[in-house]
Image (cartoon, rainbow, N blue to C red):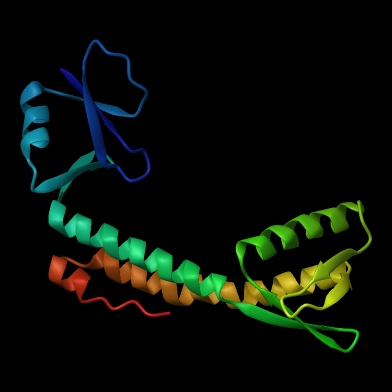
Length: 179
């Protein structure tokens, strides 16, 4: 018998090992003939889910993986290009949603909510130095959330469904992803 690992989430079959080797679960016990048939079949990717095997054309799976990666990258790029303006004390403060802003908003928000600080001095993306309190940080975060959530739910998700449901490489490749 041969032990063949598989991904617990996706079900994709992975490496195989002799029966006498200890491997972490989940794994399948296959005969040598079953394992050889899977290992030598270069045209398909195999999955094991809900007690059944599924084989997917490798070219189709590769096309879906590439298109999913494109979808992810374009969604992230769109999110990272977002900007919000928050008005405080008559000044329009510009915030760009880049990694630094995400980190700073999260850190400041936690510090303010924990009472570790009362205000956070912030230099905005339009070079205005502002003192922000917990209410300000929460409001800025809410503005970003209002812009980000629809990107994932209304744009990314339908593209991903289209990719997942495609039945041919041509169908996958015809999906044009724009954000």
